[in-house]
Image 1 (cartoon, rainbow, N blue to C red):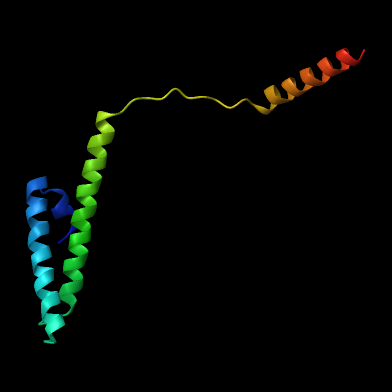
Image 2 (tube, helix red, strand yellow):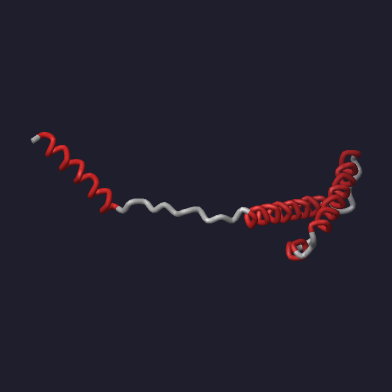
Length: 101
């Protein structure tokens, strides 16, 4: 199946399709284990890829729904610029000189 088709499906449809594909994969694996040659060996690979696509879509949907719920902006902390760092270094040096005098 194509990714576009899978993305347009609902969560319930995706879960039912996933169960169906896993059962189909079990049948293919059983045929291979018994020693009979499958009708189309490439179909096993296609089923595995489709299962992976569905699991990826379901995972991204879970992630996106969580991120929408907890979408809080964290305050940005800016790093001091080089000039500010140099200014601090100079003040430390000047304070050491004043202590020595």
